[in-house]
Picture 1 (spheres, rainbow, N blue to C red):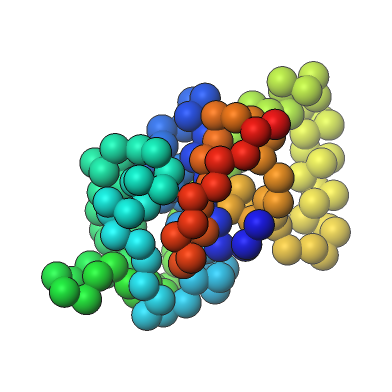
Picture 2: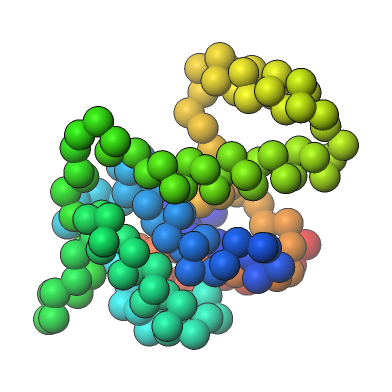
Length: 158
């Protein structure tokens, strides 16, 4: 799967619009989607992911509010120049990722020390962090994935 794919897991406690927003923000902030690249229309991405257009529209509105994308009639939705400054990273997304990781680790039976050790090891490994948008396998039939620049629908079964 491309490193520019967006996935939505309908069984997740994270709302679909937030999954889309967080993944697109990560793709933009990591440079996988670059300034000026065109994103699919709201209707196209919604159809590809099997979601209501309002869900994708909300994700796009939040990305616009964060100044990560710009939508112009006739020109479509494009990646904006990255904002700069002391808080250029997405604090909300970071908190969401931390909560998701902690919940998944607890579901595996890990205690607080094991979770902290895993995070320290990941930070010290020297590897770029993986994001949900960059994973190569889909583990659930409730997930839909789409390449945001190729706009290809792909539903995979476990």
